[in-house]
Image (cartoon, rainbow, N blue to C red; front, side, top):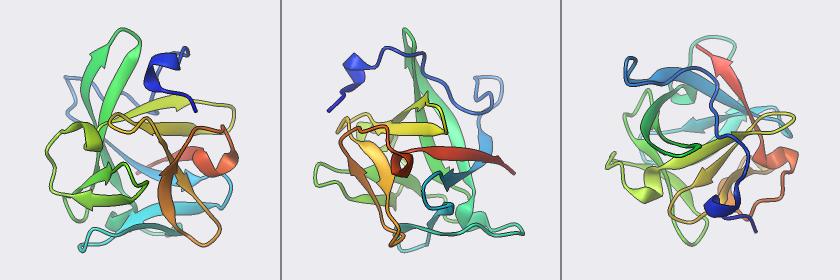
Length: 152
């Protein structure tokens, strides 16, 4: 398992979330499944087929929350619900009222096919499967852990 301290590559995110722009709006498509990261008002997180039109439940505000050396820390807030992507030690992924806490802070890194998101509190990576489930798991660089940025 790779921890945040072991990540040696420059941390990056598609788009420029800087202090000058409070956030960028993105969708996230899983490389392995082709499904998009989705959520609902109840706080459930899953993947669904990517909408051909505007689906605010598949849009995420990506906000830079901090930086330490080469690491960039981000918050992912669902555009429709206003809730933030969060994870816990039991690998659950859900949305909750935004607090900017470590469980809601993610570090991104560019790989060959997409971006991975590592949770700052757990050091586990945002993952998905063919059953449209979303969870965190130890880093393995597989396509189920890689997400393509979609511009909205």
